[in-house]
Length: 405
Image 1 (cartoon, rainbow, N blue to C red):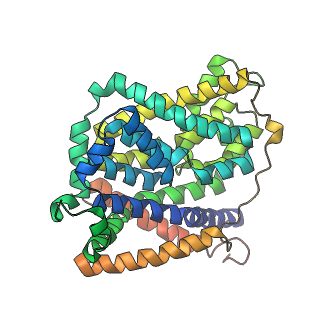
Image 2: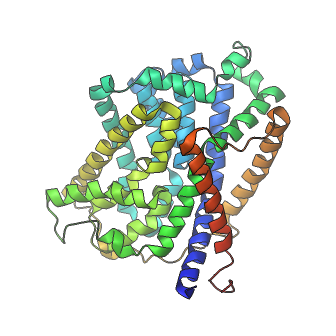
Image 3: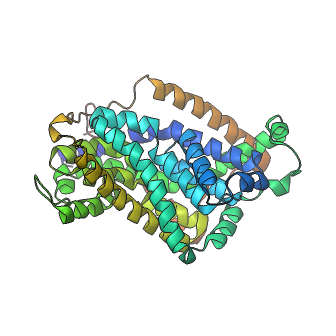
């Protein structure tokens, strides 16, 4: 077998596993928060806090999203939890957008690779995304099956309010061993719903990083040194297309965004690319599981419209104030060191221990299930996930330095 292919296979496997290792603690944190919301917060309480699409409810959704900032899959789970509990659709979407865009860790990575202007753009853009989403939903809500989606979300996550005394306060629930057992069960259920998508997504991301040349992404974007309005609009539209090929959202896309910006892609195109973590196929599939395909496609369309509009507004706003960054300031992208003893290692160690406790608790309560799912599509994804695991394991031992040749 060709040595270059074996080396690429090794790189693809280590990159995929490294990216997942980097994100694991965020998955665990997001799913734990989601499970706690489902068990400890009553539907009545959630309806009182975030039941209407008013300024207070949207502001609360934004704040809670910022406070629980996490990876896309975990944010989707948290959003479904609060929506099923009775939060309004707009506040729920504000929570989702805030928890994936108003993210401290993301800002740090952007600062390292792209510079402070992109950090400012990320946070201002996060607020713009929420405001524009609210406006678009107000204009198009008649096309959204909101109550049908809420019923489906409630069926998917169950209703812990019905399983326990609804008059029990959250403080009493937090002190209850029985309720923490419910949290453990919900935590495992969250993983069971998305493990196939996560496995395939990270594996594909590693393959793309190893085998797809950067020139492929660079040729997706058009324009020149001074792109006009339609060139910028085209780049903002192509940004989500490029993100589609990377699968796993903003955190892993930042090094590639730096490469694209250093090779002439405009500020608008880069911001659209970064904002596109919620309009990729795995996210669409998870939303379809939670709410049904009609609502999932509606959310996708709304997010596409607002992210393109936000990218354009940011570009012209920064240009007006003379703040557009220069491509010369972008630092060179070097190979990432994934498996080092840093904060990620200790966070992952903590959530691995927590996950082990929760899995043991869940097995004791209700037995073990693999989450294969029903239907041809789910069974097909299960098969692909098993193939992905085989690809990853074999890839660790072929090519590279010291690999099997």
